[in-house]
Length: 183
Image (tube, rainbow, N blue to C red):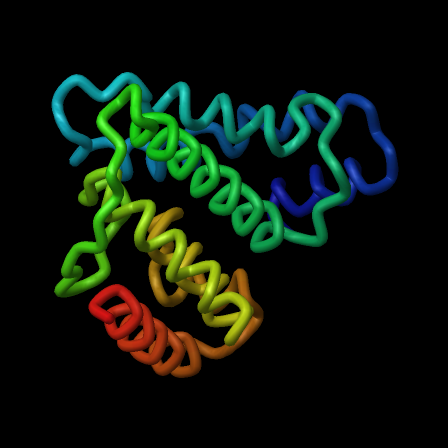
């Protein structure tokens, strides 16, 4: 049993000090994920990796962490929080005051969200919401792979499925989203 699992169980049991131990334990891993996302952002980006991690932590509950089932549950929630922050930031930039006029763009292959401009990110988010209604597990896989930067192996553990299943689901999800973004 990992240290993270022990802390998550202590959180579930109501230990008030467990949240204070959780952030330092996961901070570097979350920061690396956020840094990967932000490394390819356009120059002049106001959102930094550290700010993304801190905002995600606050959205997850800050020092009042909810009960997490396991490591995968926590990182899935963190990926979702980061996705929502990036989407909110992109939407804010797309208001008329910031130049608006959203357009769909061709996306040859899915890569980390940090490699996309705001218009592409918003189009992907819209397609991902439709995909979630079609197949929630595969949509969750996209969030873990695309927004959190998890590998197939890590995503398989988080979703509690086999790695071959993740590979098949990832191929299907990419094809579905590609078709949706190009329609």
